[in-house]
Amino acid sequence: MKNDGCRRVHEREGEALEDQEREGARGSRDVSETLRSSGKVGLAVALSRVLGLFRVSILSRLIGAGALADAFSVAFRIPNLLRDLLAEGALSSAFVPTFTAALKREGDDAARQLANLALGGLLVLTGILTALGIVFAEQVVRVITSGWSDDKVALTAQLTRVMMPILALVSLGAVWMGILNAQRRFIVPAVAPALFNVVSIIVGVALLLSGVEGERALLVWSVGTLCAGVVQAGSQLPALWRMGYRPWPRLAGFRAHPGVRRILRLMLPAVVGVAAVQLNVFVNTRFAASLGDGPVAQLEYAFRIFFLPIGMFGVALATVTTTIVSEEAARGDRDGLIARARESVDAVWLLTAASAVGLAVLAEPVVSLLYEGGRFTPEDTRAVAFVLQAYMLGLVPYSMVKVVAPAFYSVDRPRVPLLASASAVAINITFNALTYRTLGAPGLALGTSIAALVNVVILRLSFRRVIGAMTAARRRGRLAWLVLASALLGVSVWGARELCELGIERLRGGLSAPGAFWVTLDAGALLLEITVGFVVYTALLRAVDFPGAAQLWRLPGALARRLRRRA
Image 1 (tube, rainbow, N blue to C red):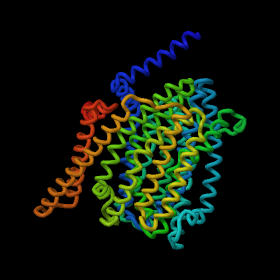
Image 2: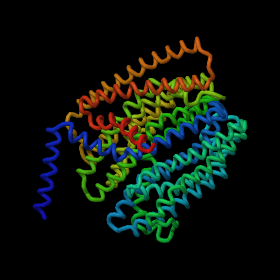
Image 3: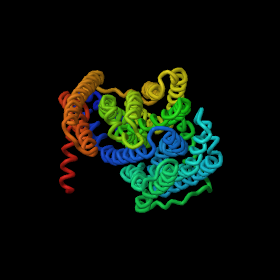
Image 4: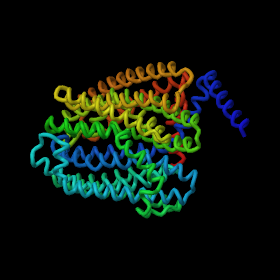
């Protein structure tokens, strides 16, 4: 047995040396495997994010980017901030490793008992918070905002009371999502948010067609949002039922159960550790609210676009990474854990660097296409585009945090993400307190980006000390190629945009057409510009054998073939 163990150790060392000697091939395969694992999840999350942008696009035309939009943004943010801190953020980081360990070591029945105990405890906690939020809605709004009129506060509090039960609903869904993810059933929980958006879109379209506007439209929209939360949580039940799980919240034995104690031990620091961005958003909201009507909504609209690539790439990779590193940790394979984390980090670099550059260059046309119309003016478009560009500086580090932080929870070291996020929050508050009056809403977004960078730097430095070094052959050379490809992407997209704008302006001067024609033309031009950037970026990285680039290059063709087969 001892000789076998030594042999396995030497085999792993030999493989590591072989990796360093034979640069790209093995690394490319590893990253490709990670991309394939997260690919279906990414598509499901992308569907949800696109529908989410469509939902926000409808809302922008209903209420614009002024006082009404500010009120809804804050009211919707209150239950969602608590949800991110207590349910989807902290719980996911603590529950999945613990549930996975129970599955591996104790079997299905013990794991399901743990799930029902977690469900019962979370329902009690979120039920109490929901009730408090309804009773003290106005006081909570005044804490978050600054300088708002009594009427604006009263409207926000009313909307908050309507949507506060979303916290309990989504908390149920978070436990069920963790059960499914831990057993590699990624698609159903990834699709559930898309159903939330579908219900909201139906409500929004009905409001647009009926001509309902103003505060009444906001109230109806808020009720529809609550109904969408019910659909999102309940959509996961059929898959759980087929797996043999019966959701039945329990509290008997809650405090004594070792799995529950581990969840709580990981979850308490994770409330801060994983949710740095949510805490930063809270801080930004108060600063933005003091700047008058509009900045709160501008941050919200820009953040929705910012979250599209995060959802498609960062969240999808993090979902897969959390499960994989938890399995490696449960087996005691530290080398495997490091390898899986490194593959996810490489995939984040490949996918989000291009997204950050592309959205920074195309910020204004993207915002215009998504939001402009109705109450949303061209001035609103320019204001939101500036905020979006500031957010893009944080896209890579934000996504990196999502795939690096789960590794610390899998090895029961939650204090490291806690320290990282606490440092990030301190930087964010300090920067915004010093600059928000001068830089306005774009400065607040910039503070969030700087905070995300601080967070990931601390995590990466700590990863080497706590878990191990993410060594890889020719990493600096790969990074140089990535920087060059990103720069060429930016230049090519900018050039394509200039040419498209010139052509469209000439058409406008000599052609009279309905508004829908010009919107379609703008959308086509934007798609062309994105395609140019994609080809330039992936072609260069594929030529230098950057890990995962070949698979990314083949992705459009693979999607087209799949669509033809289904047609």
